[in-house]
Image (cartoon, rainbow, N blue to C red; front, side):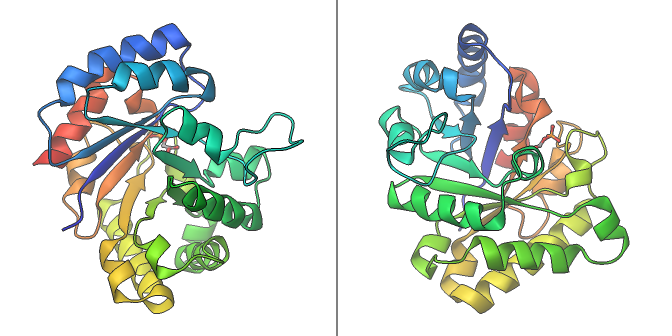
Amino acid sequence: MRRPIIAGNWKMHKTVAEALALVRELAPQVAGEERVEVVVCPPFTALHAVAQALAGTRIALGAQNLFWEEQGAFTGEVSPLMLKDVGVKYVIVGHSERRAYQRESDEEVAKKLTAAFRAGLTPILCVGEQLAEREAGRAETVVGAQLAADLTGLDGAAVQKLVIAYEPIWAIGTGRSAQPEDAAAMAAFIRRKIETAFGKEAAAALRIQYGGSVSPANSREFLTQEGIDGALVGGASLKADSFAAIVAAAHK
Ligand code: PGA
């Protein structure tokens, strides 16, 4: 049985004080949802403080990015070991905003995935198509190519621990979510691709999230789809009430 995983991607939001206020409000609200894995991904500057505040709660800590080297002359980067050191368990890799604004390539994403696993972190790999690609009927081709490139160098033992977030780019932060059936169809496609490349066991264990304008109002529709094991939540993760409502929807 795959355990549902709801992760909050706070993006470039929250000072340390704001981050602490949010997790202190959130922790009691999700304390009863034992069946669901709950993850928050604050900005780097708040990771250490949030880690302390999460001690004794059942919320896990995630980061939004990492570099693929362990240390060295890489100004401005943060290594997997540094994340591990402050108590990070999950790390988002290849978010479409990084692919767009930082021109992050599939090759870099692949290096980051390998580095994350090497450090004992669990990556949440983001894949997804642009609107024009979906409208041209190319969504599966695009996502399939991303997977093939991004997972280069990984084996089945790693892939079965991986979390993949399917996030159609046009649905992120727009209030326009995908159709739940389309998201489920893409999740099934991703699982078939994984099975072909890494085997049945990896495909059965791997968790697939939907992301893109997930809200308390629509989360149940996604989370009840066959093969969707959770959600990567942006905007709605910035408030305790709305994030807790999404976690509750996954619990049912
Ligand atoms: P959103 O962001 O929920 O605000 O659409 C999702 C994401 O980018 O992970």
